[in-house]
Image 1 (cartoon, rainbow, N blue to C red):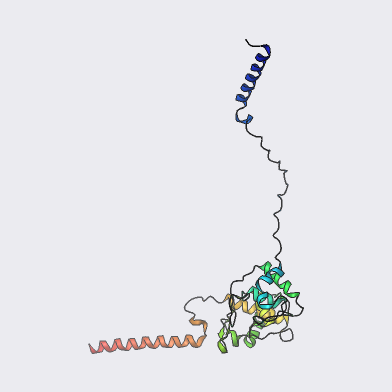
Image 2 (tube, rainbow, N blue to C red):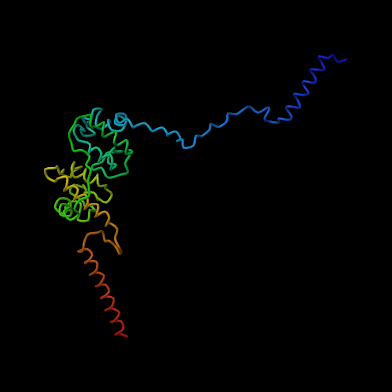
Length: 263
């Protein structure tokens, strides 16, 4: 026999069961946090900036084994004390450094470091001692004046077209087609490898601007409008090929005429 308390308990359980069935999954699913309201016109949080490269750490990991911890040089590499920002930026920006193996003359490659890492290394090497040319900032110059400067100072080694030539002792003057304006001006000021340096007493900043503009013009004219460039060795080579081709046609024509006469 049910007591009044037991009956009340059963009625309460029944009411609770009906309520659960009515609410469905919402009654048993944990509550989720409503998305935060977005204020119209509000800006999204700015992404966290990447940390600046550590030039000292990069130097110790990639340069110190050849140039020494303090840049004073070793048997494997020269001193970097006083070389200046332009020299470091040129060597790293053209991929000539760091070397993967010993080379008599480092050649241009894809840079190993990013622009930010190169800037960090340039700043760190500067702590070894001041001096040396700064990184130039070339401006548009006079192409006609640059042509004269190039012919007098650069063409004997890099050729009149900037395609480079072989030098003595197995060395080469590299082509200039891939150099940026800054790298051209840097090379003029620091004289990498066997190239002589041209300080401000020899070529003014304005003359370097003229020279850089002319070399950039040579780069833009590198593509040939048509035909075979024949190594871009100039009109003498083109004339010789034309004579040989013409003489060959004349010989073939004479033989053909002679064969017809015999018949």
